[in-house]
Image (cartoon, rainbow, N blue to C red; front, side):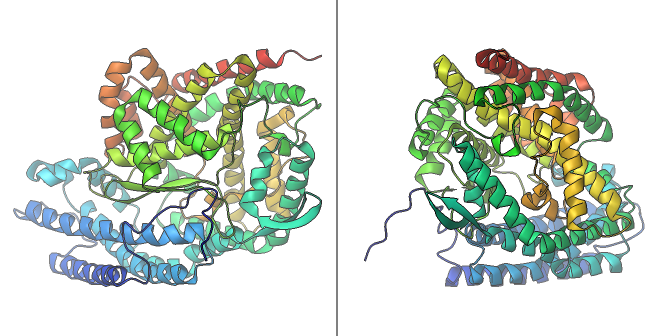
Length: 602
């Protein structure tokens, strides 16, 4: 009996190993265990660990290169095994074999995290400038070493760091796993086509894009009811993750989790303040957009479930095949290299697009190995679905340009991780607008502005929520209704009169997976990425030739310098609001165009 092919593609992981049960995977896993143990032996022999600063010995350069080469090889092998295993979990969290394998991997992570701490401490004990002068390998990793030198000042005592690593799989990592498993398996009861159906949460959230307002309202109500039923364990997860982050950041002498996040994202407080200042100044423009959308829908004010309501004719349905063809055409308009990469991603099944039970919601791209990435979406047949696909393919193009970098060199911050994805998304959006008749431009503008509104307005609300939640969590755990109240307050501060204040989303803290990670304040880097990407696209429009010459080099260097240094290559100063205002002016022009097409209030 043959099984019908899925309506949308599933990704192929067999280019790495035949299966999780294959002898090849088992051999690779055992080789990793041995490599990690051998790395520990090397660290012991070389005295890699917490030591007081001392003058650079004559053989330190050679010892550093030997240690770094072995360390990089172990990190690369660990990444490949982890990404391969996550490929199964992301598409089916009920896969017990993958769950067991990842749990085994986590045990190896404990040892590797302890070795990473020892490596950082060792770097902190060295004269970095002298080391860079003696070692070519150190010069190639100069920025990474400088960052590690600062990180070393924030390490706890060796025994405390070792204990933190050992406790992580049963602490914050376990709460994150609980959240991921619980939410990916959540089925929502909703009436569709005259019958009550149980469908996955990502599919319910996709109904926010449906043209039928009543269907959107029912989906919104059903979603909130489901989050309410699951809220107690999710709140426990959030309280526990935030409690761990607060404890560890304090022990490591960070002023706050936000201070640690700013450092990890390779920016400074001045950059963050400048960006958020410009974002707040833009809120009245976004409210104009939301009010114009309400007029287009024929309602007084948008409810939360109207945020993604489609407008216009959309020039037909954006099927997956149509989205693929359009993306290939537009990527080709930029460069043959970008088009060839995307063509390969589609042809070699790097993309998993079908929403289904057990699959993680949202979209992401992960580097798998060598020059390959894997892209997960929950594709909806609309312009926004096509745009999201182009966005994630942009991440893959970024990964392509990092080929040849060591794993330490390609460890880019979230602020710069969105650089190529926003650029690629903007390419297809601009092409859509240029090719569409006036009646269809509304649909394209709406899809883009809805996304921009999320990244500027909604992400600011998430940032405000996280700030408030951390401040309260310092005193005690927060109840479900308290978390909801903080979220509603943040949404009212940002959306203002652009949305009906009585129909917001009090469970957005439960719906967003970014809060359930030790990498706190996972939100504002997306705003940085959007506005930085738009700024770069403006540079491309001004001088396409020189931009193409420098752009791939910029992508290849995103783990090798801070954001301000990389931005300066294109004449951008990220520490003042003016650059961010200029990027937001691009969005304001789209809002003006949208408002004009919709027309004034009756």
